[in-house]
Image (cartoon, rainbow, N blue to C red; front, side, top):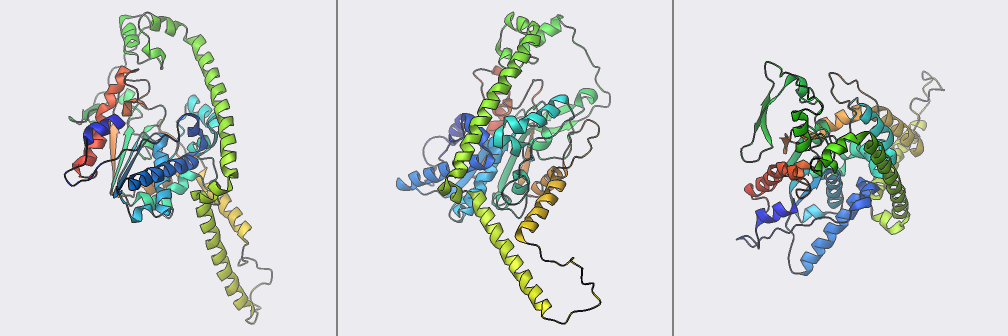
Length: 445
């Protein structure tokens, strides 16, 4: 992605003397991604502040700002702009482009499969703080709501910051994304492609930015379901294409890939065991880092969650103070005997009681389950509210990316590793679309 941006912008400043400076965030590499969207956002915001300071020290001035995130990075980006907004960054710098690729904007969703059930049971435990936020089982700050729900609240600073960007571009995989499905990457309540294997599908691509879809239709006659017989010529061709083998096995050449298929009953359990052990160790390290971060008084005081909690506490105190003043004024009046003495419906709640009731209400409304129909993924009431809220942003444009056939299109959408996986080149048009769309609107300069 960085390479394509550099190629698109060229070298040196524009005719107006404006130069595009690209910062590739490094703070959340490797195990740091498990520390949560919020702490990841704090790190990236600090990186941005440091880079702005360096540019200003060299005599340059930052006048415009755009941000792009892939997968988890898209959620981190939404958190980052909330921090920047709270710090007053956008009073001096104009927000321009906000772009995400294959980002779980409403969290991960239940698909009704066994894998989905296992993931929802183990994910929050194995992925540490990030896992609880991905699966919306966290309680963020004093709100009692999950972080993703807070970030989609029009009254929250994250949403207010996002609404300031005149160009919001959302790229998501229409099919085959086993990591971040269609409904969450493209912020929709239903998946129109969920039954495509049965109904068939006709896809029209953008001639300039293939594999981005421009339109699709369902054929009148469903295609014939052709079964591939094991060890048949078609089966061997599918092995060669690397579509039925997971990475890194898909990189193997014949006959090694043939033997890999034969050994899958042994390799898969071994691989899954190693993954669980590795994730468990990473999660334990992450929880230790988070405890250190939360124990650092200076860092905790500067964190956005503390600023928001402090602001909410002050608002609650002010409201309760006003209610108590009104109550005292009412007590000074003659008692109306028509009202029962033991009526406590108008009793003023304490701060702790108000928080408890709010937390319980948010939990009940945000963590309920909806009924999935016709193979559609299951969205909670909280996720449906997120969809409605985020889709109300008029400047949002969505791009459906159709990459098929492939085992998992999640990495292909951004051509993450074209050296190791040749088929990742299939996603080049997506990245070029994002950069060229921005430049065509003179957004960079």
